[in-house]
Amino acid sequence: MRPDAVRAGWAHADNAAAELRSAQGQVPDAAGHDLADLAATLADAAADLDGVLRVALGVLEEHHGGVEDCIRDFLTTDGTSAGEFHGLAR
Image (tube, rainbow, N blue to C red; front, side, top):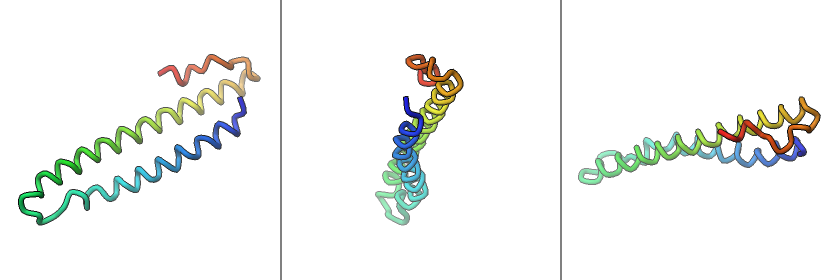
């Protein structure tokens, strides 16, 4: 394993997480305001969207931590832990 290459790959996940956080900031606007009959539907959809964003961010954060745990194990064991990445088994 090349830790630098793994971390470089995770830069894409970090970028995705930043985009998801940005989307979270826009959810209140997606809920709509003063739209009469559509207000309740849009508010419900915005709440669903917020939940999806939270789950996606949680998955990215959990796996990012697992990858870092694996890299740490790999480095502290001089590569002998290859193939036994317990941080990703969760």
